Length: 323
Ligand code: F6P
Image (cartoon, rainbow, N blue to C red; front, side):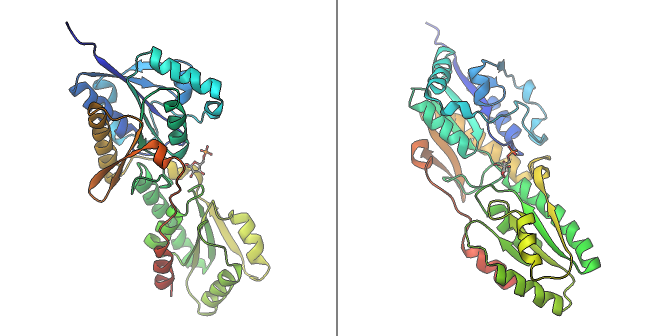
């Protein structure tokens, strides 16, 4: 008797991240090579609820390795927190005969996958978020590209800041994590970083800025993680003691766009391939992470309530470099 062809669903969820397309491409091509039928699910978990499915072939994912955004589109679907909706979504997964749904997304996606597993639906999560706040992996898909976009912008702001001897506050994304801000500060040689993992010391920022002015330093660049304080509020606090003009820039959603870097393309492709192999080995409800040179396979239930703070030691790196 001919055995039934296995079928998997693939979706991207939460904030898009560069490299999500490369991950979908890798899942589709690895699945097809192993006689598994890949079905795209449009607009994240919402697409399951609305049965918005599209069969994917190798040709459908051609050239996607270099494309920014996510061609399957994404959404936030807070309705999944409702038990009834969650059960309905899990029932659709089972009725449609998806052996597993492959989800590329961040912490919200992990929570969604964990909730679905309680109603008997199988999922596999690949970490995709520019914030690098997903536990169980050293790097998430999209982080490297976002960081390079930030460097591109900060380097240019430094040029104009130096021309006017100005003080700049630059706000970067990251939600509750200071990872992007911290790495951007190190990589651009900025002078100070404010991240949610450490208490804000306004007096220290003021004296550092005053000292640099006194010494006629060409610029003062302060990188601010959005999760710590917003630049408008920070400016108000600094203005009380700093008489000269302060300029501020919010980099915003530019950080999420663009063609993925080589690092993100390779990471996404590796995680995509590994995720299908893990599925073939019978693994379900796991996060496929990568650390050093090895894959890290962790049950979703183990990581779903963990937090991943930015590396504390790097605050010291910033201090030593900005003397
Ligand atoms: O999680 C990714 C992220 O870009 C965060 O850094 C940011 O806080 C958030 O998404 C913005 O979300 P939205 O695009 O829904 O405004």
